[in-house]
Length: 192
Image 1 (tube, rainbow, N blue to C red):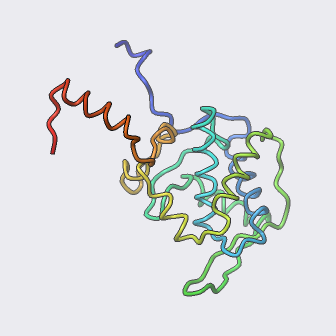
Image 2 (cartoon, helix red, strand yellow):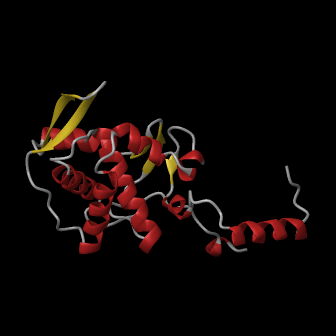
């Protein structure tokens, strides 16, 4: 197989707006979650991850295009600490510490509206779906959900390529199980 046809792992996309897309997508999600019962920084990371990776799985182009890495509590954009510091410095958001059941939540609050100029209606649909999907979940709940097969393939701190979006956490169907069993027999794969 020649080098040009070798599949490559895709860690980031050069999309119009660059890092500003992550600023605006974050601000968009923060605005949307203003009335959510639970919404902290962990949940923000997971909503962005879901939107980007679902978009990649569905159309082979993410919403923000930014690089992700594996953290203890799930995937997060590599640049998120910088983006949050900049949004705070620009006065676009503020952080409010809120007492929840048995923990404190660092809740980002929007102080201005997101600029949608780099986002297509389809991009916004992926962001909205991620907000809706995780709406009633706590940070712990979204972290647990994000610890699927894609997350399990990495160690903490390692990059998470967009190609991981093509992996599924769904169990194999009976026909898929039969197919792989017959393939294993045909190729003399050992069974445990």
